[in-house]
Image (cartoon, rainbow, N blue to C red):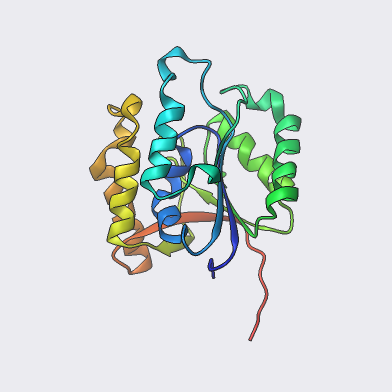
Length: 210
């Protein structure tokens, strides 16, 4: 798949989802594509997460993503199933304005209710567009990547640096540096490359060209 010059939309339910799922890929393609990173919930109903939006912007900055390419909305965490229509309408608004060629969102194997809604509504909103699913290890079961993208050692280290900006989550096991690196090594092994990030295929739309 050729990412060069494409408009690539990254969707996450919460701050940290995009970086956890595809931070290395995001760093790898940021200068060769038109990207937009949209997080649907700012998590501000939880007082323990008051710094999370600031940390998200710092994380994206570590990946080299300019602030104007990062959007954080205010849908209420764990209430996404009650807001399906509003979320769908917002995703359709992004489609009209950004016109993505490729969309990255949560894998269908994710059991978190918010993640699940984002995936289902993405498949509705982006009919006729390639949609790929990323893994957030804490809530994904039976995930296996069938789409593997090679990334560099620098991309791997930048993803780890980006996630280190989340001081709020520094004790969470899924932020562990060795786990993050091991996952990219494993996906690299599946691709017979040093490092890769892996995705499942929700929809591929393509054509054969000379």
